[in-house]
Structure formats: structure tokens, C-alpha cells
Length: 219
Image 1 (tube, rainbow, N blue to C red):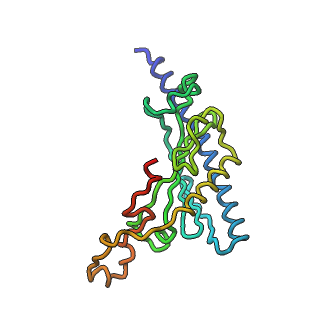
Image 2 (cartoon, helix red, strand yellow):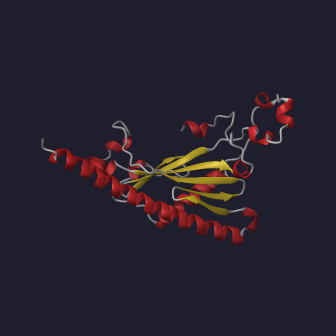
Image 3 (cartoon, rainbow, N blue to C red):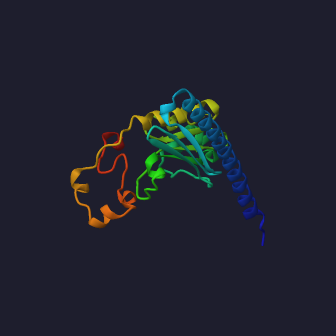
């Protein structure tokens, strides 16, 4: 049996995977560095901003400010887009389909109190995910305030400047997205046990969008 063909196919895919993941890991390291710098500068210049950086692991860090926390998570796998995805129709991808293989960094927004008070049932929301390919080109799927249209995929390069812009835009979007009270009917009943329990705060589910649907979430 000739193993050369399958061996060559596997090796080429492995080489592509290694390059894409390496690029994404390098970008994530810069995200960490810049987030730490931003936190230090804001904390020094604006003490009431409550800005702090928390490096959780090689795959996660948190940037807290005001009442919010952004959680940045590096995925360890390479992704391909579905055939019907708009990005697959770009001339940039049609010229070389391997450009569509990307690593991913996800950005979630949580309330800082959710972590500080161990409220395990509180909800966080993904506000964006960054895709980076073998050529260090990137685009962002997410809210319009932080998203970069996929049509710029052919020209957008992930670097220190773009990373700082992504972090700042994410902070601005999050800061402008206020916590609203949940509908009264959803919280009007409580049991004696919930009130008496020392851990009752952990059972009160809190999230910025809880019980509401916003026009921007349909866009």
C-alpha cells in the first residue's frame, strides 16, 4: 500500500494548522501585553475606572473596568468557514482557499461582580470573535462597534495598532451597554430558603440583556 499520498495530505494540513495557530498565539500574546498596558495606564490616570488586568492562563485573560469585565479566550484549534459563508465568496479566498483557515480569539462581556461574588449562574455575552489566518490577515465577527467587515479580510493585518483598536473599541462598546433591571414578573417571587441562604446572591441570575431583546441584537 502506498502511504505517500495520505501522508502528504496529512502533513500539509498539519503544517497549515501549525502556522495558523502560531500566528493566533502570537497575536493573543500581544493582546495580553496591550491589555495590561491599558489597564495600568487607566488605573494610574483614572483611579475611579477600577481598571485591572488578570492573566488567568496561556489561553485566557481578563480586563476589568468600571463594572464590567472583558474575557479574552484563545481557541486551540483551527477553523474553516462553511461554504455558504460570505467570506468564502471573496476573491482573496478564491485565489487561495487555504487563506480561509483561521485561528480564533473570542471576547466575552461579564459583570465584574459576577466573578467577585462567585455568581456562577450569571450570564456573559460574546461581543466579538477575531479570526486570523496564515498570512496574519484578520476580520472580526461581532457588534458593529467593534466588528471589522469580512470584506476587509484581504487588507487587514493583525498588529499592535489593530489590537489596541480592538481592545479600546470593545471597552467603549461594553461601557455604553448598561445593565437594565429585569422584567418585574421574572423576579417577583422568592422562596424563604433563597432569602435565608448565605449563598442566595449566587442564585440571582444577572446579565446585561437578561429578559430583554434589543434592536441591535437583530442586526
